[in-house]
Amino acid sequence: MPTDRHEAWDGEATGRGPAAPTPVGSAAGPERATGTSRIVVADDGVELYVTVDGRADAETTMVFCHGLSSCLECWENQRTAFAGRARVVTYDQRGHNRSGQGSPGSVTVAQLGRDLRRILDEVVPAGPVILVGHSMGGMTIMALAQAHPELFGRRVAGVALLATSAGGLAGVTLGLPAYGARLLRPLVPALLRLLGDDPARHGRHAVDEIVHLLVRHYSFTSQVPSSVREAAVRVICSAPAQVFRDFYPALMAYDGFAALAALREIPTLIMAGRDDLVTPVGHSEAIACALPSARLVVLPSGHNLMLERPLGVNAALGRLLRLVTRPQPALREVSAAC
Figure 1: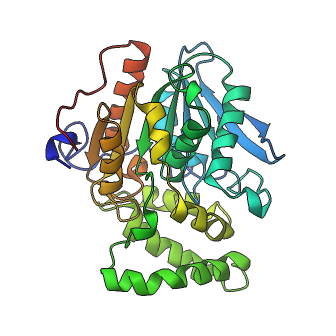
Figure 2: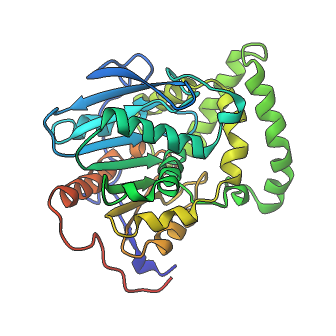
C-alpha cells in the first residue's frame, strides 16, 4: 500500500501529542443517562437499547455502532462533540450491556446488520444518515451494506469505519510472534468458554485483572489519563463475559469485502490506530484499496482510538459531517494504485 494513501496525524489536529479527552470517568459507563432512550425490538424479538441525543431539528443523524465487549458509552466524547450539530443515535449491540441477548443462532454479523436496519427504520425514518462503526461496529455497517446496498446513497450519506476489518482476523497475531500466535489460537475458544460460562465462579477479581491488563496492552499505546483508562475498563466490563465466547467464531470467519461496493459512491472515512494490535492498520489499508476515493486517517493510537485520540477522531468526523451537509467533490482523490 503506497504511503501517500495515508493521512498520518502524529498528534491530533495540532500535532502536539495526546489529546486531553472529555472527562468520562463518571459518564462512560452503564450508569450514564442523557438525552432520551427507547427500546427497539429486532426482527427476532431481541430488545435493543437505544439513546437519542442532539438537535431534534438537525438535518443529519449520526448513528454510532460500538465494538465487541463494549457499549454505547464508548462514544461519549463523540456524543458530546456532535450533539449540538446533528442528531446522535447510539445503541448497545445485542448481548451487550442493556440490550437483550438472543438465541445462540443469532450471534452473527449478518444479524447485527439486521439490527442496525431496524434501528434506522424506527429511530431515523427520514433524512441523511452518517454511520460510524468501531471494530465489530464497522462490520455491522458492512453487513447492512451487503444486505441492503440500495440504502447507501439514498439514506446513508456517509460512513466512517474505525479500527475495523473486512476479513482475515483469524490471521492476526495480537502482537505475538507468529509461532506463539499459532500455539495460542487453538486455545482461545476453550479459554473463552471458561470465562463465559460463569465468571463469578472462577473469581471476578481474576477476570477484572485480566481486563485491566488487556486494556493497558491493547486499547491504548500512549499515556492516557487514569479516568480514561478506568472508563475503558468499565465499558468493557459492562458486557457479559460470554459475548467474547459467542461472537468470536463469527468475527474470525467474517468476510465483508463484497459489501464495500455499496460504499464506493458515498463519502467514506477510514480510521486506524497506527499501533493497533487487535485490527492492525493493514486491515484498514485493505479497505482503502477497495474504496480508492475514501479518506484514510492513521492516528498514533491503539485499538480504542475514539477514547485515546478523541480530538483526532472528532476532527475527521467533523469533516465528514460537513461534507455530507455541504456536498463537495469526492472526499479524497487518490491516484495511486493499490
